Length: 451
Ligand code: GLU
Ligand code: MG
Image (cartoon, rainbow, N blue to C red; front, side, top):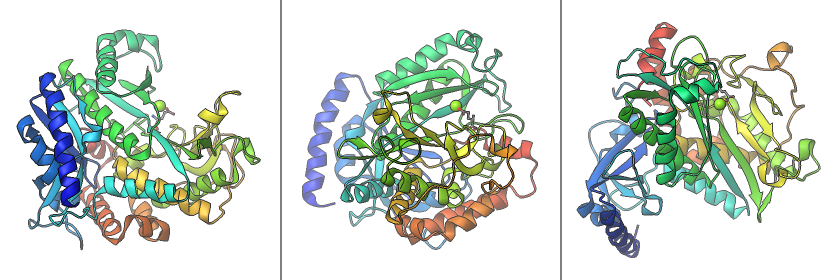
């Protein structure tokens, strides 16, 4: 970051500070997401926004080596008490947080003291993956679906905040004030809510938002979760985005929707391939499908993720794809006739909200780009529950197996860099050791309130 860029950021901050003061904002929460998927924060008063925008806020790099329980591991590239990073709020993504009166939010870009992007800054890696695709003439539109479960009060045990049937109107009625406030707070924070509904599991709801470019989609995922968490507390409720809130039953997914575009044309529709896929769209999808075992180390990053990722729970536990198949890891969505050029997309179902959404974007874009470059082709689609067939491979059923696949994948290594590969692997192994030998109930309980 050169002096000119610092001056540009300072000027933008002065302007933003004027707007924020007029809206009675006192502080700006500047967040980033760590390797383990936990959103961390430093905040500044409004008077310091200009300084923070130009010069960043100091923060230890040790958080890249934090485990889910706040203990610290160390690898070749992360861990230890020495060093400092600068967190630069991205003011292009500033949002007020109506559920936290007086507060605004901005995602951080992490730089070193030389003004270079930190090699473990996941937001930077997501942006770089987007730029690489742009250099190929391509763009991705993406969105995370957010599932969460709501517990009554502030206890650590989970006490579902609604009792009505799955997807039942009763559940909306039981928590209608809360859900209205969630929608209002998201809208006021600039999030384009597309739908909200009760989900299947106890106390579970879901919100869908409009697609956006990959970095914006990841930012929105953070903003949506923190907004839901804040609105929940106001209503004396506790929100959990954990992959498996209770050891039995259905978990929380964080399905990712992706479509690939060139010059304003959706390459997931209008082609000669199956269900209208273009060759580019199919190559992109094949790059993701073939790398799903490795991608799970990013998208299903917690020991609890593998309690969720089981057949017959709509979590996408099989390494296959299919049209509108909710048991396939990759569900292909065409949308309705007449709308397909806009609506067609891939849904990656096997991921959950313990993931760092920026790393998810960086890794998915890299896998898709590699698949297109290889001229990848999809296998036969599966149009029934894969559990009823012989021979459809399961995705890894443990975090350890996913990490082994991740470390062996050249495309991900090239895209994410040696430092990130090593750090992800040591953090995952640290958490595997942390939970070693624990019963599923204990793993679920220790993960429940962390993300
Ligand atoms: N809750 C399910 C999961 O764990 C997904 C349900 C759905 O298909 O929306 O991913
Ligand atoms: Mg759902």
